[in-house]
Image (cartoon, rainbow, N blue to C red; front, top):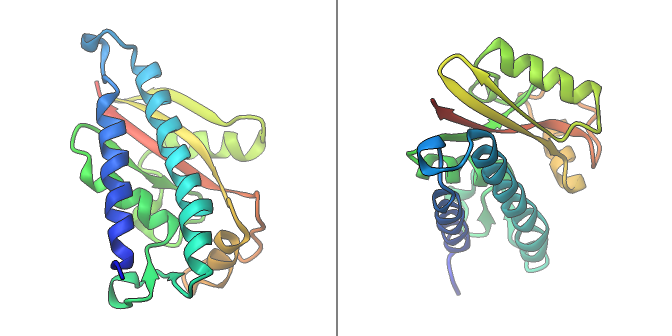
Length: 181
């Protein structure tokens, strides 16, 4: 039997290849906005596939997503950990998750502009992607929803959670891309 983390590493590698294949910057003949939007679309797609295709499928065989997946041979990384792990593999730009009520301070917005963008998304459910210049970076945020009920349940029961009423489909934060200009 393969280690549960093997699939996660394969998906992280695929996401990294996909993200790096998108030319970044005006010098490459692609606008910053188009580059950021393309990266966000790829990350959202991989996150949905991981959440619905991998996590939900392996649950049937007794493997569960766990925050402490490395210490458990019958666990795989959580959806958010998947995105953060992929982001850690990419050196050309920053990729991560941010939220107004994150479980960890590392997922707080880094600037007031990011906070304002999250609040805009929270107030307008039709707003799915925002791009903007913030200092020396071009940034993009893609609304990040509780894809499955398990996402909401995890946040609602986590000891660090300041919000306990998430439901499937709720905005939990955003996937963020930051590119130096």
